[in-house]
Length: 281
Image 1: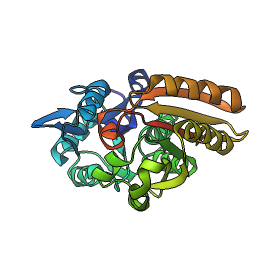
Image 2: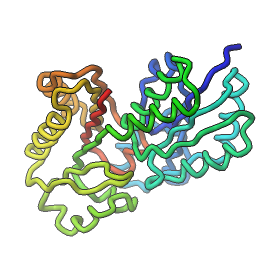
Image 3: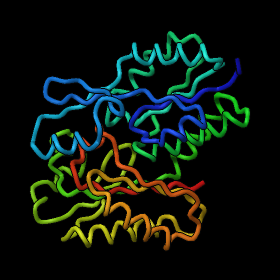
């Protein structure tokens, strides 16, 4: 049985399964409530099913994991040989996931450091990878936390949505809520700022908004060595095209991930989402 610092995150990190397996990262699932059904993200509801439900205007909400689920996860990870755990989660501004993890950590059989990364999607995923790489190099809990926090501090996330309606209904748009009254006249570009979703720019058409998203991401990347993730919901062609343009424009590109977001994030953004995460190494 190996002794090590283990990394736990949640299902909104949207890390590829092979990447999680290679680095020994465990993800605790959030829940999507579709009508009267509570379904675990990643195993019981797909992004495609979620998009279809939203398009049919079926009621969709999301729910954090319970402290008991976290407690069981920490127990199993400790039994696998972990001497400590770093538990990294989506912004506490979006979900009570962080709070549930903190409650469970107090009774865990090994030390647990719970971190509110202020991130979501692969912005969170890159933090988990940084922590895992530190742990693999025999880093301590503190060193793994520092690696994750450093990665979070340098990471930026931007995204385009076809409508702010889903974000408005879920109470997730912060200062951007003032824009909603004129949402039909503009296409909003948003960013993750201080753990909140904030309005970045207002653009008149979808094509211009996506072109502007590309410019912002390429400018943010500059010539530094960066990892980039392109996310979408029910917009694979948009995502593939943006990824290929960024591949050509970013000279320091290391890894490029293209993936559909899961049901939890999709429930709050709606079909048509196109996002990009820029994370310097």
